[in-house]
Length: 331
Image 1 (cartoon, rainbow, N blue to C red):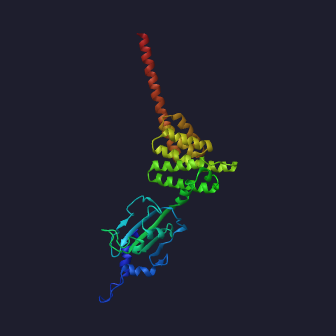
Image 2 (image 1 turned 180 degrees about the vertical axis):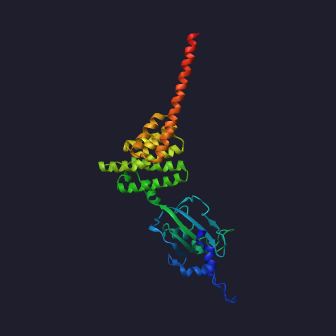
Image 3 (image 1 turned 90 degrees about the vertical axis):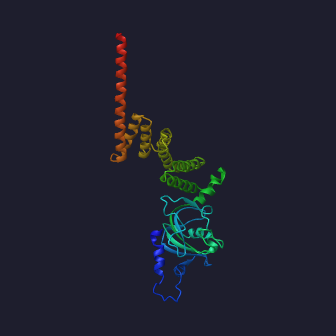
């Protein structure tokens, strides 16, 4: 967030031509008139630098943020996440320890970049946090919301008994499942495959526990299960577990026998298992639906070459066995 030029902009606010006998307002003092008092007591002031979109962050959500904390007159943040490629997901009410920062986050929207000026009672208190934060320090935080997930809704749902879960509308269950899948996708993109698989399977279990009452509900459950099976299959491939990848690829095909992603996943798994004929069958079916898909075509070529090499080796092996057998008969 230093890309927004905090220190440069603060310095620009100070009038360097002011007579020395007159005290210039401090950088934080000059920021205050541009900021809004979000709770009414002056303890948390906010300036929106870049507006976000959609609804504000809900209570107990999990947020993915970049943030930097500054002391007045400091050129460097005393803490920052901007050097992390993947900032960790932080749970409100648990991982965010500053009251002012949490209250500020609840006013933000996805994609928003804002600054918060926090008085000591909403930051590190009268004692501070030696040696980095002096006593009674006012601090400035730059915060950008990259994404957030309504994990509070997930927590509430999972805390219910199975009987209670079956009384809530199906739409609520599907929202919970989508949130869990989003968590899984986030972990997958960070190469945290075991964490991703756990979230996908948790969502799958919730759908499996649902006591459906109508055909339309059953179809909606199947529709929600399909991307989970596909995601688990891919995750198992990344974990080098082709048997399990094949298992979930086939589950996806039970729902949609013509699904090209499922056919491709099964083709990948069969290739890893050296079952080239089955791999070729799956990929040929996928190619029939998407003849110009480069991933399918490239993998099919690879499978065809492996299959040919396998047949050639098998042929050579039988030829050698036959020659040895023929030689032993002559003797």
